[in-house]
Length: 370
Image (tube, rainbow, N blue to C red; front, side, top):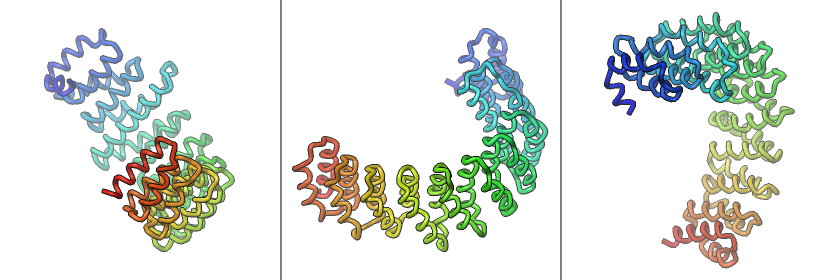
């Protein structure tokens, strides 16, 4: 429907201009989408600029997304003007969607139109957002996280001293765009009082892989806040791709496994992503956990990376007290094409009362005996 309307070109723009006051908010939002494909001589762009001032946050969001498709850098000012202003009447979800749409549109336009457009966007971030209220500063931090250049280190630094932790947390994302120039700022963020900021640092430490990265990750892995430790366990999957850091990462992941709970789950997720028999061997340490979810996640890692050396561990899990673990063991044995496990699968099937597990056992047997 949208494509058919867009083919009307200038006729669509004229018709919508006449009917706009009578359209509902839903219809105006759809009209914005259609206008994106019919921007002849800039007529649709003019209407979309006006739609950015609509009373409905949903319509404004649709206008921003349409502008991203069909407009050019000169419209950046109108998008920034909208970002500067709060609509206290809008529902939270609608207001957040509008902010997301405006930020996406600014980034798309700036990147599509080249370095001069990026320069213009950065200047507008500085002038219109970084000196504004909390919502404006947060939007500015989100934009810098996607557009910052090495020359913008001072701007990122100013955000790292913002009173709002959410702004500082978004500023951490911008550090990754600064290259080597961001290393000093990263250490400022690592000492932040807010756990959300320190947690965000984990991925950036792993990504930048600067000298001292392993020490920083070790410190984060022992942070007093669980959220930081969980984020670090996840970040270790990236750091472990560097051969020289692999063993160090395994040591931190093993410590995370011992911590149990969501920290151990994150560690197992990283071991799964890292892969290899050495990762599977560490995951096997969780097989005797009292938490069935950890045992199941460990079984998945062993099934993917353990090979024949750990197949006996999977066979033993066919008798585990938790049904999800038994079902997982059957699936992993089938994925490994473990024909030697067929007798044990039959043995378990004769005893199994859970229908979900029985289905997994039957599927495994069908696969292995085919």
